[in-house]
Image 1 (cartoon, rainbow, N blue to C red):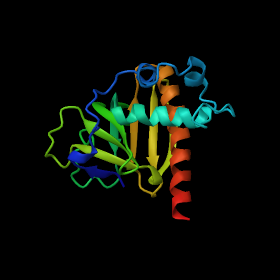
Image 2: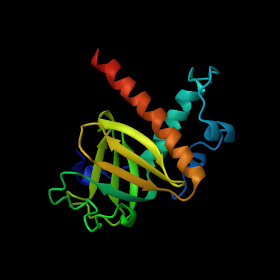
Image 3: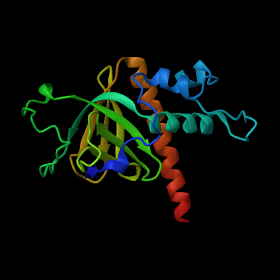
Length: 192
């Protein structure tokens, strides 16, 4: 199930969230090559820190998400239980979903992605929705500008995020898939 978060789930780094995935990645690491951003292909080339291209991409991508991205998002859950973050004013017609401006970010502390209201109040415990990385079942393209993130817990909980254009959607989609695979692998190796 989607988890309501509190004040600690908002991006903590003091930097303003960004509007463009591509521009945000460039601001995190200006030397990051355009080909690496577009292709998201890890290679065997090691940099001076012994980090290959894929590891560097994941590190930069997570740093970008820690800063946060402005997105339009629709949050749905089978067990709505008066969750203030759920977009409950939707009609039963799936074509009339309500999308609200939110901040999509990553928290290393909780190993989760968050969707926070843009004008959230720090003491409002319903100001963000948490998507634990280990509970994410599917991340896929949804239309030409959107991504759907579904949880694997068997519920109908899902988030649909709409970005500014198809390029931003493709970069975020590829980056999320790479990061989730990496983070799930890191968590599994920590349990051994």
